[in-house]
Image 1 (spheres, helix red, strand yellow):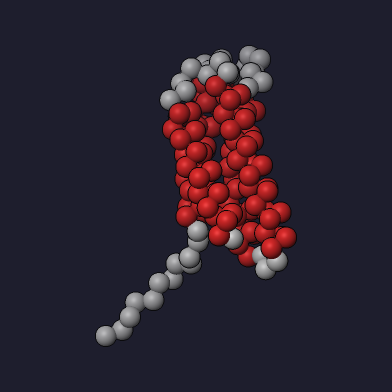
Image 2: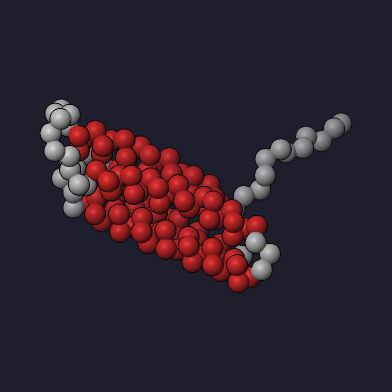
Length: 131
């Protein structure tokens, strides 16, 4: 019998959690943008609408930083990318705080997103020690 070879690359669990965060942040951004734009399309825009783009951009930046840290051969370079991932995680929490204080009506995604970020932070700590 032939063995089936897996064509999937092996990524750390942190990578998959970062993809989950990215997906959730895109859904949040779509929902919150709809809330902030509202029915009138030609009125003044809320300054909080940019927070939704910030959260997507920060979560999008997590995945390449994780992969770069995995591919580095020197420990000093790995630590630099680990610091970047920590900084992006901190910025995501800060952006969540700003969204919580915004006039968005539907905030049901925020507790779920914070829960995912807390799980990501736990995985991040163990990943940084193993790297």
